[in-house]
Image (cartoon, rainbow, N blue to C red; front, side, top):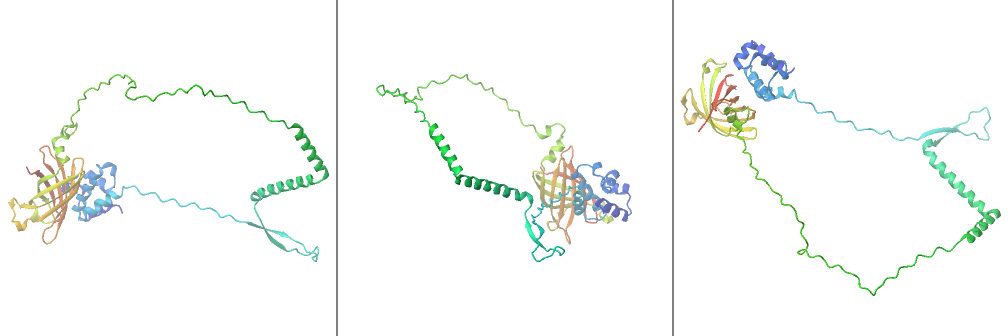
Length: 347
């Protein structure tokens, strides 16, 4: 069963329709249907899809982190299978049975066959050529040992003696006149060596172009520059819009967080500072930590609040606003609540 089918079954088990779920999660019904049908081509980039799946899973009572990772893993390519090693057929020798007849066996009696190992015809060819060469050398030796062969040898020696001619004398060497001293060229003094004249190269002064501000790049706005570097101190304010417990509807919580961004990775720690608009005592300032990534102008964070009696986990999904704030939605496993979140940089 695919992850989309699991989400659909969990939604139907809670009796929710797509429009009802869209109103609860603030995600359009078309995108929710595409998530259930694994229609990745109808969805935004993969980082946005992971956040949508987490919000969907949290709303229907499933683990948002597990379902988000499993949903993305469905579309990762599989590794090709390893190639099998090639096998080499062993060399074998064929056994041919050659019948051998003995003297005491009649013509009508069966003749036993003895196995004789023979090499393949291709391997026997070099040996046959070698045997032929040896036979030719032996025949020549026997021929030279006979009287006719000796006469032929003597006749060949006589012909060689008659035709031997003294080799040409080497050409005479040219005499060297030692009375005239050789001309020695003195070494060249580097200081007195002429310097080749070259035309001077005129280097024009280059006016370096200033590096543009990211906020001034085409297609960016001041709000997008806020998401480009989120390092610093922030105040996160959440407001519950729906939950399984009606008593927490409309609950407002505020946290002071210090974020640190390195490339696309964002981490941070902080604590709760207010509840329902009222500051909380030091003993009630529960610590909170976040971990996530920046994708384009979208900031996706997972948070863990170490509350009593158990830890509370959830997600923040924020995008820059024109006024420099970060705004978006949150989902929490505390009473299955979700709602809006806004982050303001502390001056």
